[in-house]
Image (cartoon, rainbow, N blue to C red; front, side, top):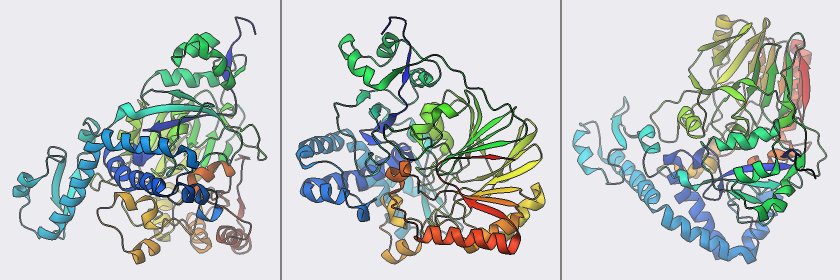
Length: 532
């Protein structure tokens, strides 16, 4: 190896962002959901593990129990879990006090306040909440504790110092433990970098994907000693500088990166929807587009909603230096589970964040981006969410994400405003997660089992997807892979089969669109390249 050698990250290297050793996702970033989730899920899951480590280890390896609250840690690592639990109880004591106060006060005021003025109740606020909440009524005199989210990001409840990055080589697509239930313990095969997510040095690390650096430069960036350089080499490969310009052909090219991640390009503009990009593991059977298949500059990245598989902090941090403008939907700023994606994006280091509302337009070269209403998929809870219509070269493409067509007339109204849709992209996870799965830990009361079973995060089934396609008068439709790519299993905990309900419903949609509407439709998987 010459002294002038330049290196980039190996294609199998993941850089996983962590908060207090747990994988980072929106509910462990925003201060209120973080406090509630840490107390009601993370703490209880670790306590459960320590009561019976063999049960957790065994259950983590049972495909039928994927997504359950089981820590995927070997029995002999129980002392490390105990130390992590003790550290959380000490470091997050004020967060737990806040979560307890918020829950108890919210439940108390809901029982007591019946429409009289709420002004006198400010004097009864618990100390943990003072200065961080507003008390309001809805139109039916039901009280709401509105958390002042911007204030809370500046409070001690936002534990920025717990953020870090973990570099590791991914052996195969199924090697990552489930994101929500398993903290990342120390690993001799991994590199730990204690760095806050808004630190500009993170951009320098990820610039390696297109601008290789010397071993000494990389070691200095990560704060490694000379003795660590041989270990660092496990994550690097020798490479020459490479520039990846945007596509220069005619018309519109669309690249499917898996799940709901799609890159739309013309010679003038590049747009990435719901960035979730996989590395290429050392052993893999399914080909995919990865980071080296993206242009050096991404003009717009569009986020449809704040679920962990659409607002993917791991991918967003890696692409931050390439993304010119991040576009996010506006939240209603009233319920503490409905976090601001704009504030969150700012906290992970994005400077140019544009927040859009219903039918708001962004003008782009030879076209525009339009925010389209997004119904359903959130267990009937308010949440920041938006589908997007992208108009380029006279073609209208609707990226409906996980929208559920609960009212087809809404799409007819949209099309009267912006014109018919040529091409539709839509998800069909028609049997979504129950209410308690993600939202349970942040609700002020435990949901009724009947409600949690009935209120699911459903996307379209075949009937509703057909109604959506007809309402927008599309001539071509693509259905996302509904979690079938193996690299999203650690996020979605799905074990798909060829005869499951998702495949049955997708097959029914494709047949019906062809027979009744002369619409060409297909299910996407892994990677695809489409030209308009």
